Amino acid sequence: MNKTVNINLGGMFFHIDEDAYQKLNRYFEAVKRSLSNSTGKDEIMKDIEMRIAELLTEKNRGEKQVVGLKDVEEIITVMGQPEDYRIDDEEAAEPAYNFSRRRTKKLYRDKDNSMVGGVLAGFGHYLGIDPLWLRIIMVILLLGFGTGFLIYIILWILMPAAITTTEKLEMTGEPVTISNIEKKVRQEFDTISEKFKNVDYDKFGNQARNAGERIGSSLSDVLLKIFSIFGKLIGAFLVVVASATLASLVIGFITAGSFSMVDFPWQSYIDNFTDVPLWIVGMLILIAIGIPFFFLLILGLKLLITNMKSIGNPAKYTLLALWIISIGTLVALGLQQATEVAFDAKVVQKQKFDLNPKDTLQIKFTYNDYFAKSIYDREDFLFAQDSAKTMVIYSNNVTLRILKTDEKTPYIQIEKKAEGKSFAAARERAEKINYGYKFKGNQLLLDNYLLTDSKNKYRHQKVEIFLYLPEGTYFKPDMTVQNYDHTDNGFFDLWFDSDIYIYQMQSSQVKCLNCADVHGEGEGEVWVDEEQIAREAEQEARLEVEREMQRQNIQNGQNSSTTVTINDKGVQIKKEGTEGLQGNKPKGLKMDKNGVIIKNN
Image (cartoon, rainbow, N blue to C red):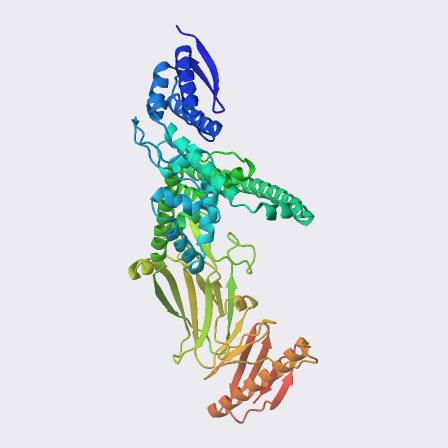
């Protein structure tokens, strides 16, 4: 059992065995005697103490808490005996020391040989090349790509400066021994002495007596203080933002990992775009976004805490490698997703339908109140459950085009379209689109939506409706059609202000039978009398139909009563009775109390 002594060595606290303490104390006394005639003796002793404190700290990182005699002997072996290092003023003797392990260079900023912050000078020492070449490369990056400035600032923040003699020796890769410490300190003193010798003291005295410079110096101190406070505020802001972002990313990752237990509303949207498990995507996003914000957090802490230690190069390089891997993986997943929409295909469904030439085709869009509450509710795509609790994709990507056909029978053509990684995959996805429509008398009811199973994934599925009508067909679009009509306006110009208009398919375009010209009064103002327009259009439509029916009766040699009615249900034509040309019924036109024109031929 031995006594222990508490000592303060290089600003660090140690428990040391009494025998070890005596040996270490004798070693320090011997070093002081060997440096009795050396310049900067106190500075050298301070650096030696700090170096020995670092070595003791490395040896006591485990459970061991007391420095023993063996530890001190090993450190003395590394540092060397004082009598082995006698440095004259002219040249240094070659030291005879032994190393317990080979030392390597450490990356520091060299402020003594710096032009800005010493970053490139430090890299020059670390890589063993002239800093001039690194400065040329940095200028090229700054002028050519614009990234050099950002890279330099980040390195300036992350790289510690070589301040002590030990750090300067580690930066150049020289052994941290008594000889090298003394040599380095003497070189620094010689450099400072040389600078003082070359000073123009008269000029310096005149400048010192200049009151304006003293005021400028005071102002610079104030500005430096202001910039220091501003830096602290920036550091606090970075810490808050980075911490909040990292916390959100971690919570999001944990939430994503629990999808096997709980179904979240946005789970389907993520599953729609990739087949990779969600927790892997979450982890990649966490790494890709989290690591830059982690370094921002470190930067903010460094601005707030002056003497904060670096996290170490191994940790930095490991995080950088993880970030590069995550970014590369996410890019690969993005390219894979891009191939999912590389091809498009369609499936065509055609159906003819019967329509009496005298009837008016009513066109209307309907909505499903299970998915929407109004015909005007539109969704590009939406994941929802149908009435059978099956996950489906709901979309209002539906369009209508009205075209002319030379066939005698009108027909409707439904084209279902989708995208995929191949033509076959796109066609298969298009075939699985569910779309409905039906005929009810002279009414065509079209769904304003499409459905498909969520397993088919959303790949821009849509439905295009082509309504082909023969020449002379009357049709009346409902107000709901205006949201889905994609017909060329030069062929069919749908009036949006009302649904009372009736149209007829003609040889070259669609004609509105009861649309009137609207004249504006004043720039930007349009005055419309809808009742007057409706009355005039109704009168014109009746006369047009009457003339057509009269020509047909004359050609057929018939005498009949023709009733023409135009109202919100369209055009209705009714004939009553047929007689020879010698009939006794009076000829001419008459109108009943309901505004129905009756023509007797």
